[in-house]
Amino acid sequence: MDVRCAFLNGTPKEVLHILCPSGYTEHPKTDVFVLNKSLYGLKQSPCCWHKVLKRTLFTIGLSPCNTDPCFYYSQNRNQPLWLFVHVDDLIFGGTWNSLFKEKIQSFFEMEDLGKIKYTLGIRITQSEESITLIQDKFIKQILVEFRIEQAKAPQSSLPRNYKELKTLTLEPPKQPPFNF
Image (cartoon, rainbow, N blue to C red; front, side, top):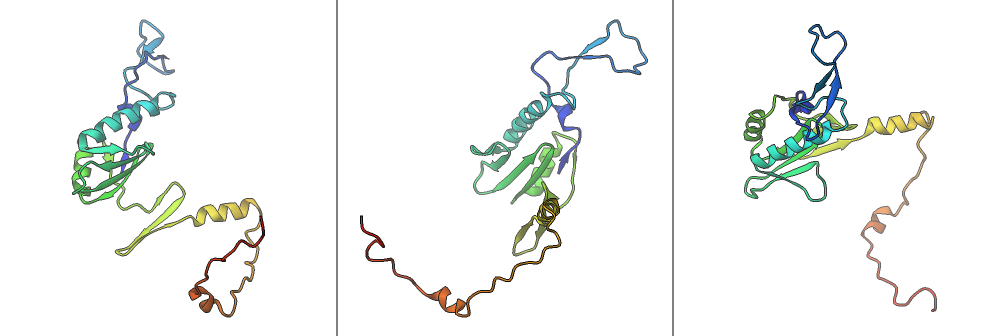
């Protein structure tokens, strides 16, 4: 899901001023305005947005992961839900997806983009049995960058007794290969 105008939901804690935009028809008493909401382009905007989102997700019942502040999980272990946040995009899955959509849409104006197909350069395919992450576009980009997109794949054949070697159990050496 995508949050529309995400940064406009944040409120900066600092007093921020901006110059009157060019083309503004009403002539105010001053050429400077005080911002009540964060705007796109301010260095504080992402932080303000993240604070609002974090507070909202906690209200819904999600906690941030200790090791990754962009990953949230459900506090209720009987009803799991996992959420990944990338700026204003929310990628989630769990047992209460539709309820989560309702709750998050009550806080923010959202656009449901459907099942995820592509994010952060990763193509995602889903089936009943699996979820597959594919980075073929990134690999092709690297091949083009190094000018080897037309290169032929090397022939690296496996040994003829590959299946036998695969099932072979090796015992560890009884003594070190060299003396100390």
